[in-house]
Image (cartoon, rainbow, N blue to C red; front, side, top):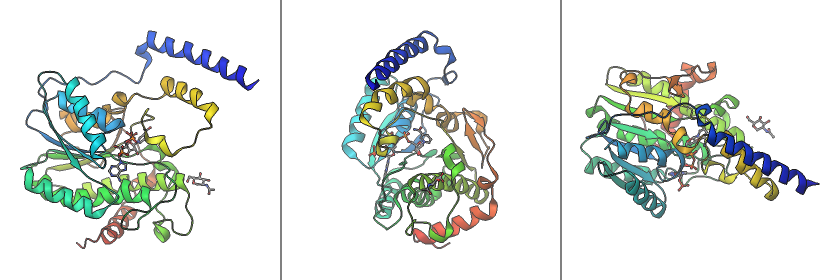
Length: 323
Ligand SMILES: NC(=O)c1ccc[n+]([C@@H]2O[C@H](COP(=O)([O-])OP(=O)(O)OC[C@H]3O[C@@H](n4cnc5c(N)ncnc54)[C@H](OP(=O)(O)O)[C@@H]3O)[C@@H](O)[C@H]2O)c1
Ligand SMILES: *[C@@H]1O[C@H](CO)[C@@H](O)[C@H](O)[C@H]1NC(C)=O
């Protein structure tokens, strides 16, 4: 019985994939096309650049001749990704620099930023892309719940330590990759590290709401500096983000097929971050959230100035900054 259902589903899925290949126009919209050389002379840092959206974004930026700094926690995997995107970027390409950055360690974030400050004369764009989703309860080196620690707090310190360089490089941009799942979260100020009770989906949503509130407060603080910051939600993208989610063995092929049909490819998922990184249309725009390269309306909890301020102060204390 279940085998028959599976076969039917696989065959049905196969037909759907075929149809989608035949009618690609129905997909998530056209891919952006910028003139070759659009990013020549520009330095872009991408966190989590070895996989998924970050990797696809890095590949596109390299083709547009940017100097791409791939900030990754696994050097081996990052070097391999770098080799691959270089090989595919064509004759006229920018540069790739692989750098170690573990956002689950404030020490690593500090070392990364020191190296960048010594080695780079400017940063045109910082893309806070790295993230993890629904991992089992774990803590970072500094004792933060892992999803909040990597998705929000690590990037909070990273951005803070790179701000001087971003300001002297103005006009410059910060791009924050959030998620529509922010809708199911709130900031649990009473137990930010979920020490009393861990709900892995709540913690992801909380961290992605934190990304949006961070964007809001940072934009306010950066007014008049020539540095802009915008967030985005990429949609559902076929990446390794779901690595911690257990799918029953038999359901795996079905899930895979469904992902081929309904999920965006990494390149499609990278379009909005690419837009926010490169497009002249968003020059001077700050404090907004985008989806499919258009401004997205957010729920009130993501535009709450008071919560954004409070989260900023708490985060500063947690990562050991006083300002
Ligand atoms: N895929 C989706 O449907 C979707 C939807 C909404 C939002 N997003 C957001 O999109 C962003 C990119 O995710 P993705 O979908 O491309 O997933 P992915 O393929 O799993 O990529 C995530 C990246 O983050 C890196 N990372 C994880 N922990 C890190 C740490 N401690 N230090 C440094 N880097 C770390 C990973 O490095 P390793 O490879 O070494 O683990 C990887 O490069 C995330 O912020 C995610 O929340 C994705
Ligand atoms: C965990 O959090 C999610 C999202 O906030 C919520 O929908 C769900 O009911 C929570 N689960 C439990 C067991 O509390």
